[in-house]
Image 1 (cartoon, rainbow, N blue to C red):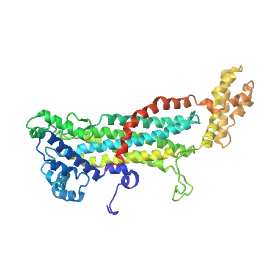
Image 2 (image 1 turned 180 degrees about the horizontal axis):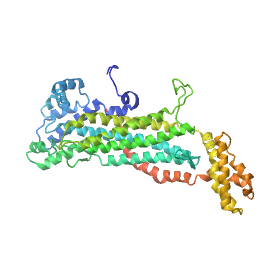
Image 3 (image 1 turned 60 degrees about the horizontal axis):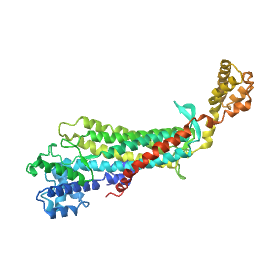
Image 4 (image 1 turned 180 degrees about the vertical axis):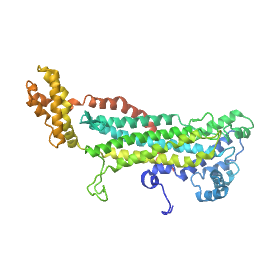
Length: 479
């Protein structure tokens, strides 16, 4: 296309070639032709007089559709499916009279859309597993590294970098499980006819209901899916699209949470996303190192989450057995949501794979807050040494506030020194107070929780779902 025409940034900047190929016109029409071939093959198997030469010619032209010729037909016919019926018939003249026999447009469009979405979900599943595995490696590597916890983005009890990573991992792992569940129950439209009654196929088979049912079963199986929907109007229920895009929204939510946390932590200097040697952070401020990848994740995630509402409205406003106000909307929302989610997951894997954990800064932030963290233990030491709990509590309150005021003035936190010098803690050796400043004593079961999460949940789950994700490898090479 000319560079004078608008092109989606998802096409030119963000999505992968594999996902673009799945949603490309040539792949879609190749699926249409495979569906027409499967229909004709099955009709012949069940007794319809379809010449073998027709099938052979159809098989010979599955992937060489003349898109320009189909476009010319569509400008005259104003119908995309019939345009491709004619274009296919031109290339397979022996089949011209039987292409699309008994079918309505949804037979090819809906079944093809469901196949594309299935393969797109498989590809996203592979991307998700890669991101989860990278996060799991980060969690294991840093499971015992103390860091400040934050509630309300204010310093809170200590956690570890690895434990925090498990929170991100768990979110994405839940998306893995949701997609696996959806794929395991995948259904096609099958052969349902103009209003879903299969009337045209019943006429084709002279009233033989068993053959009509077998046609639906065999065609679905030829397309690589075990089941078709039990009933439909002309199209499959558009609630299916809504459920599928809910999965994408879920991925976007998980990724945006992770990316937002990383943006905050990069501001604190604790975690830094990858930054290439010649990368420019700002056109004006040459010193800048902005978290642009994480920001892009958040930006694309917002788009996916908002786009996922479109199929909800479409499903809610379909009229009776069929209405066409879904068509233009689906042409926009389905591919764009998948392309954007693909871009998000590529970014997440890139960020996590090159994430820089700045341990000195993390340790410095911990050290700044440790005296306050240790005050409860100091209180217990004072009581054990014979002090009055209430008096000691008041001393800690008074001294910690004075020390905090000093910190706000840009001076070091001297709470330990203040307490060691105060008469109420005279019976507690300063060394005992100092020993309580070891941050590893304040991370609770964080390291153990990481181990338990990885060994008891994540690794068994990934082992279970990897075979399904392996099918995504085929999606990488689909024509």
